Image 1: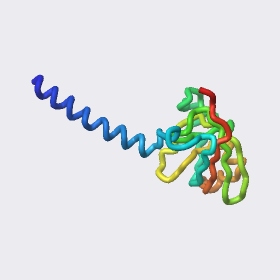
Image 2: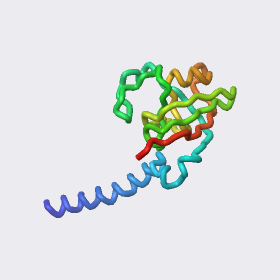
Image 3: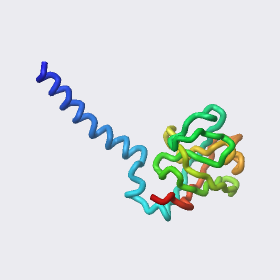
Amino acid sequence: MKKLAKNVSLFLALLTFPFFFLCTHIYGKNVKKNHSLKNYSTIGVGSWYGANFHGKKTASGKRFNMHNYTAAHRSLPLGTQVRVVNLKNGRGVIVKINDRGPYIKGRIIDLSYAAAKSIGMVRSGITRVKVEVISVPAG
C-alpha cells in the first residue's frame, strides 16, 4: 500500500510541473520577465463584460462595478493603468487592471461596460484594440 501511495505521489508530482509550465506559458504569467512594462504595447481583440459579473469579486479582491473604468488582463500586474484604443474608430480610454481574463482564446483584454461604451464597442461586443501601459503600481 505504501509503495502504491509513493508511486501515485511521484506520478502526480511529474504531472504537476508540465501543467504549471503550460499554464504559465498560455496565460503569460511571465510578462514581467519577458517585457519592459514601461514600453508594453500590444494589438489584438478586446471584449467587454458587464451585468453578469456586476457585484462579483475580482482578482483584486474588490467587487466588479460595470460603471467603473476597469479591465481584466491575463498577466499585467493588478493596479496597472492602460490606454485602450479602438482601432476601428480611434477612440481611447484609460482603465485600471483589477481582474484576470479574458479566458476566451484570441482575446487580450476585457473592458468594463463603461469603458467599452466610451470607445464605442458595446454594440459589436468585440473589436481590434491597442493596449498600452501608462503606469505600473509601485512594488
